[in-house]
Length: 111
Image 1 (cartoon, one colour):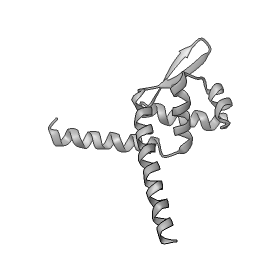
Image 2 (tube, rainbow, N blue to C red):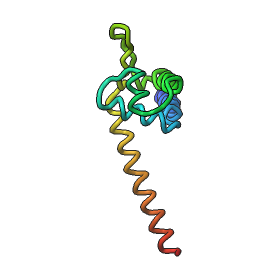
Image 3 (cartoon, helix red, strand yellow):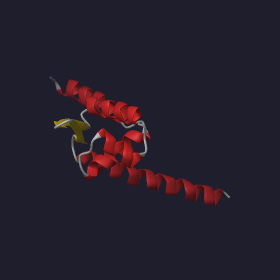
């Protein structure tokens, strides 16, 4: 694979990950899994999201390698596929906070 093809592949994977983060509930699930692995039932209780929706979101995250499912007895435990996802989300949040602050400053200057 030549460098350009590799970059194309990376860009496609990047877009796929970003699509996986497109729903705020999936971001909440990732943050909840940061503390410890959880079952679907635990995620439902912690987040107040209906079970079918949690399962659907976990499927999306699992397909993108963002979460891992491991059977433990009768239950399936979900955990982060890579802890660095949380670091990336935190960095993005910092950028977004700065952008919001700049916007608020601009609005304040205009008003």
